[in-house]
Image (cartoon, rainbow over all chains, first blue to last red; front, top):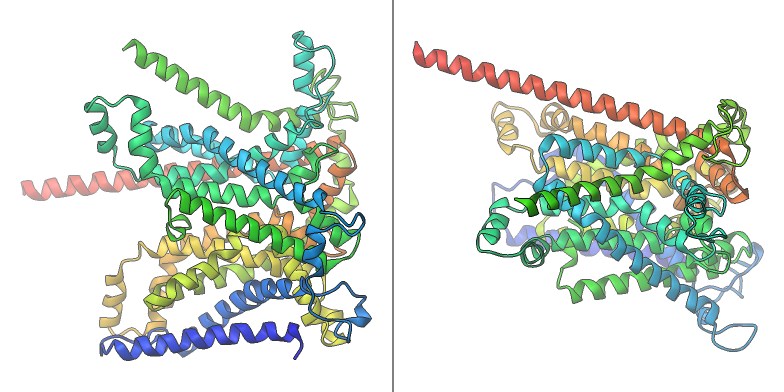
Length: 334
Length: 290
């Protein structure tokens, strides 16, 4: 059987396991008042729910991901040769990430690009946490309700402008003829315009700007549910303000912080727009490499392999950090 | 007391700085939309013009892209809202041990980079639809693939919206209806769905918006077609053009109007609730006196 067709078997096995688990559960739970699924929802609705969810989880989520992974273990072939004798399983695409074909040496270009992408994403995540935490705390604990609603609205409005236009607006601001350089030169701070886009300042600012809200809302939600009395008590006991945050607020809001950080990190590592429009000419973003494999080299197999590498590295890093800070994944995505 | 006012001043300063960061770039961009030079500049302001809005209106590719974006948005909402609802209901009924795995699967599109969703959608459907010439001819299109790709994560948004609302559902309403002889499907149509109506509305709005402004997934899944956002990306890559600023001004205007309407409606609702409560209190008092 071809390896691609094998992908379709995997979900069937998983569903069978689920079904078996349900049967066992049903047998162990001999509760006559418990209704079966179809009894509860009726035949028509029950089937409709299952069909909808199955279509989503299988055809829009599970199968495409698995298929992409399988594709990455295949050679790049013209369409006529696909499924032919040359279409064997191979790790050539992954090898090409580590070893360069041209120089026979280690593929530093792509490895360092991945490292750079991860590094920038971590910096941006930390930056956004520092920018958002005070406002999230203020809105959740200190501000008057009327004011908070207004602030909330002010936060959301810029987010209706899409990512591309926001990147464009930053480019206008940071360009060598842009307003910031005009102000800097007028005030005598510098004589020649500073190349904010060339030295990657634009990249950091653009990514931070793009995902500000993604950090804000999980933080706000987490801090909001903290009982005000706890802060009050800490203050009465004489704790200075920084200790209140360090020992009361932050430990309480840890799941929210973790979820905000995870989202911002994943989004910036996988972002395409900000690096494309705000990055310097010499920097190479990892998704840009994937983009080029697809649209310039038409090497889908290698693009898929790189996409999988990116996903695997990001997930591994997130898991590691969550473990380090002792937060469970289940708490985070809630 | 003095340190308190210093603290308050610092907080105010920080909030001003924060919103300057948030709005500054958009404000500067908006000014460039009304300035005459063909390089978008905010200062010096050389003359007021509306030409860039006319240019925008006559931009064929952008208008075609806008049409595709709307079609895709409607398609995505049509898939994602029912799927999200069904997924949320199953989440509530699924037996305990399977729930965490089910949760992980349904939420995974939110944690997957959009680039990867786009790529996997294209690779998968190209082979699946390529099985027969007919399906390849009819269905292997950028718009359809984009709908599939975006629906995968928009459904997850919808699921979260419905789950949040469902946790506040009062089970006793359901039981009362059942005791009065309603069937389970009747409970769904006449009690659960009306209760979920606000969630349905916000799922539609959020789903449409996140589809409309998506770039990462779309740029792969759209193939040879165009959406507004991919046209925009092409324009930005080529250079700078005040017509883009004009588009941003329109979008900002619409969203400001939307926000104001939302705020007014919310206030009116609040007032109504307050009045009802006051009346109830008064009536109770009168009853007590009588």
